[in-house]
Length: 462
Image (cartoon, rainbow, N blue to C red):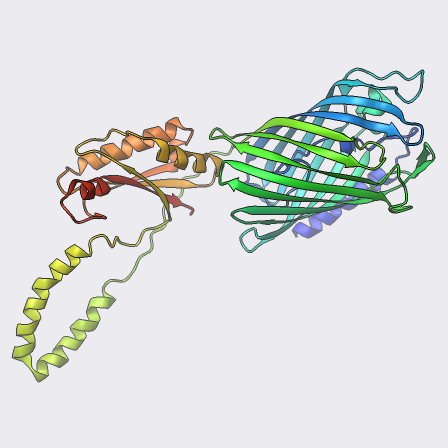
């Protein structure tokens, strides 16, 4: 069903755009813009689905050196250009996202196309609409594929011919991606529909290209490092048209903050004499996103074991043994029952089965106190929750055996308040009061008691 929707949508745009003729020579305006779907990269589309209701805005500043030059004559149509790319996306459903991107040219200089065609110092580039349809996501996002139908409107030509295309352009692409804990990768294969035309002794036709990106989570939930490779060639004369073929390589970093804002920066270098491919470009910017749908109340799933089945086996065996030696067995069984509490007390640190994923972060307290001396572990948990909008947290509060259980409630409330202060919604936090029932240390020394006076965190994914 998803595939059929994607195919129908693609054919409609193909029919609408393939018959539009160019009003003179046009520049591929897409090469001046970043992507509305950053996904940890800058210009390569990711293939993983976004969370339903997720909304985001990107603001990228981009400086380009010699983005348009004419080979042979060394005419610098545009020598330098500074753009501000504003992108917006909204995830309508897990399998459908819609992006909108608008580049604003803040400054540019150069020779222009000819002596009578002076460059505009500033203006607005081509408006870009980018629907993305996810076809499938398998093996817990380890392999996914999406179809991107990118459409560019000729808004830049209203100011100057060098600010964008003179026509609507259509560029369908296939995005294949993989995700893991430490490394993500994406491959884009695209086909760009362009009318046949000539300029500066070069022929331009439809082009085929690819983009490859690798994203490394250098510091989990904090810092990503990515590298990208882009190339495209004319369909009419592949890899023989110097003005059309292009290669661009670069990368950058993404710093993630606890308040849903990412800071990105990096650089790219262009190779060859391709039109509309800068010799180099430097970018920096910020991106912000959040889920605008109201959080749904989800009941915590509990895993129920059947403890009755275990004691039933020895109970069933006891009558058989009692028939053989009823008196001796009963007498020997009595001391075993007295020893059982001692063994179970020693085995206290073996806690019952918990639901959800337990985090390594633990907050410890002084005796008879709910004061949080060092909030760093709580801030780490808050960072995880603000970066993952579907997750909820369960706080489990403990005391040592000399403290009142009510103190566990105060400790849970103190930790919850600090999570909320760090940007976590209150309805995503649950508390559970354990008290002294689940000690991790059985000694009476102060170091053992400190280990028991704790708050633990469990991720609820249901």
